[in-house]
Image: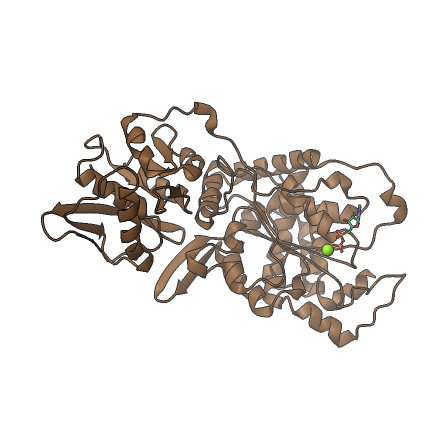
Length: 507
Ligand SMILES: Nc1ncnc2c1ncn2[C@@H]1O[C@H](COP(=O)(O)OP(=O)(O)O)[C@@H](O)[C@H]1O
Ligand SMILES: [Mg+2]
């Protein structure tokens, strides 16, 4: 029988085998295998917790070896595997021989067990390794159950070890697995009055996974409109759901959730966020770009974010992951998200409003738009200008609800799934440039409109490709296998704006 712990290194991680040797000699506990301070402190916690839990701490020489030795081991989650190792080696546990076991958990001095982050990835790695018994903190049991229903046990104190090990299976009902939402609050699109272009932009954005920016004066419903987006997106695929739940597990953000997160996350970091908070880095935890994996990263008042912070988004936008390095260590997390931004048209916000006058100078307005940066802006294929809705419209009855829109989005996603069945991508936003011609076939008229528009608007090749991808999504929303001229024209309309000089033309 082997006892395993888990060493996380970003999204990836490795099992750590915990071997305990007890022999006669001067009583003491040594832990070897490159443990950091927190693991070394575990010596005292384990010793006291064992003796206060009704077990006996062996008065012999105890050597704990964590291997592989060259793997950095951090944190307090090694307490439980070390304690289990010591109790097993001193014959105080009814361990079923030959049955490997993964243990994870932090001990308090009274023997109770604190929850830790990263239980789900640990269980996933152990299962891959053929381990099929799991002892985790009771608080983290729901996470473990998402992968290992019957042989995962949650314990709240060290005393509960023996009963847990004596049972072949846990006695929990099979139906414990539920599907969880990632975001708690989500507005329904029926509450958004008027704003037909914004609604259309949101629907296309949801259908094809495109990045989106909405700009217009304060109070016009930008924030409200964008917050409807999580309700328009399709469910995550089972693989995605597992990825997302793993990331949330590692960040310790699962909270009370009892199953896989199957709805796309919606993250809305404040504009005072640091680039560390956004891309990650602190203590190996995932940042906002990774918590938004599979869903939306919403930057409200986007120009208010620091320039460096915004530029740090370029790498994940390009590769769908984020690579981090601190103090000689390297790790990575998935970070495949849809970028959605909202902004005022100028620093004072009044540009374009009839009832108020804008006091900003032209250079101030230019600078404001430039804060987002050309490289980032160029990737945003849907740009929606909004003006405050007519007061009359606010009195109208609610429009189409999010469920109805989501049904159309789901049909468009189904078309994409079928089309990209054997491909490395699954949504229109991810069609590689080299494949666009095969997927978006234009007749002569459409081709002329397309090239004319690209030339007239001075679009970069990336932007031009974006137009084709958006046109593909528009066709998919109407269930057509061919992209026609109207699709191209509409896609151009959505791409046209968003550069400071062009804003004027919308007024
Ligand atoms: N089109 C709209 N339909 C319904 N309510 C609206 C609309 N636009 C604005 N509102 C109301 O005004 C409030 C402020 O809108 P908000 O989305 O915060 O504007 P913005 O982000 O553009 O400044 C909303 O909470 C909502 O009550
Ligand atoms: Mg707002």
